[in-house]
Amino acid sequence: MTDDGRLVAGRYRLGRRIGSGAMGIVWQAHDERLHRTVAVKQLLLQPGLAEADTDEAKRRAMREGRIAARLQHPHAIAVYDVAEDDGQPWLVMEYLPSESLSTVLSERGTLSARDVASIGSQVASALAAAHNAGIVHRDIKPGNVLLGNDGTVKITDFGISRATGDVTVTATGMLAGTPAYLAPEVAKGYDPGPPSDVFSLGSTLYAAIEGTPPFGLNENTIALLHQVAAGKVQPPKQAGPLTALLMRLLRAEPEDRPTMAEAREALAAVAAGRSAPEFPVAVPPTHPPSWQGKPVSTPQTAATRPVGPPPAQNKPQPNATRVAANPVLNQPPRQAPPNRPAPRPAVKAAPPARGKRSTVFTALAIAGAAVVGILLASMLSDGGPESKAGADTSTTQPAGGGEPSVTTTSKKAPPPMQTITAEPSADQQEQAVRDYFAVLPQDVDNGWERLAPEMQSAIGGKDAYAKSWKDVTGVKITNLAMHGPYAYDVTYEVTNKDKSVTKDRKLFILKWASTTLYISRQDKLQV
Image 1 (cartoon, one colour):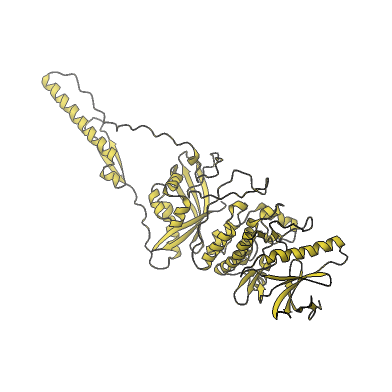
Image 2 (cartoon, rainbow, N blue to C red):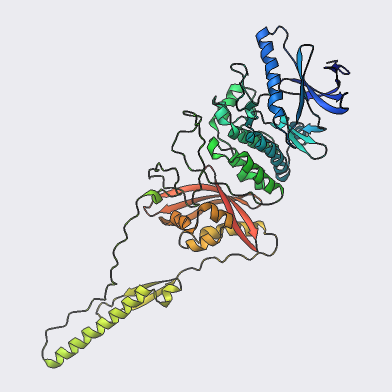
């Protein structure tokens, strides 16, 4: 192009070309009326375009200006004016000396988790404001994230965005958005909404950490769309403290993702070196996935589910929308068996009386045996000193009668919680996870104490936690791997009372507070 120095609409003097947008070329320009530097987007119309298509392209430019002008936010590129010159619309925008995130990634490869979290929190703050204004961006990708020379991050290019009440003017069959960063429901042909922006932001941040978007890059657009529609995302390998949050942003179901405002808060926390706040754990909905059936007009609210073992695979799942992790919690409570007195030790029948003296001895023997039985029953029902100390107590009746003997076997003491006064090592972090599983399911109170307050709150209280473990007889770690600082990928098996064994895999996030390592959150992973 040789438009350098051209005066557009009588006031905007074009300078150097700085990039390309969804609708044309972007130039750095000088506003000769207000004496400031601006960015001007030139709409390029294809030669020989039909008059109707030309009119539609112009309407799209005007529409972009109207929508973007509604959003005034420090992390969104502002639109100042929509001008017309020589029959073509020109969009006049704020100029930010910057590079796009895609350019930075092509030069540096990947970024650290905290840097990505910082970028994401600034973008999410602008998008949260856009959603509050009824605007969906629909094309979030690294190329539309600008990294300013002063450290400021801004989102740009609302060219295919859609505002509430505005008429959609994209051409029939036109794909709104970049395929590699689309949400699954959009790839299925459903209209995007705020949750779709959340997914696209997650895809953008995933690419910044891993070097490639969640579904990879494929020149075959149709094949790529099929991959996106399937919605199966592999957990990132380099995300560290961002791993769990990214997997939440990239949930296949729109209603399972956090809001953009929640994403902003979580990203800001990670950027500041803190743990991301807990989000409600998604529960399988009663309706079909929104992109597989009739679109959901009212988003479902995700609920918190008690953190516990996975459901037994041979039991049918209930249709309740708010369920605990173990399906037996949804069955009617079983009636407790009536209290029965402890059995008394058997007493050998006395031989027939041979006289008064024999009768007295027989009566004394029966009375003595009865007293022993009553004392033993009392000791067993009260737990006894050994039982209260965590021991197993059993009785043995001699073959020839007489007093039963009591045998006490001590249980293995639960592992104590570590006291850590310096930055926890990887070994200490791993041990904290192993110790948590070591106390379950026998000592639920001990397990509860190893959870951080935010996780206890997310579970819904101690009673809900206890119920999730009440029908479990054993739990065993089969694989444990460090996924990043304070993050562990754990695969474990659960044995239920009905003898069924189920396998589950979760990402456990730890938190170090007051010399103790706590489990602050967990997220389900694919087994």
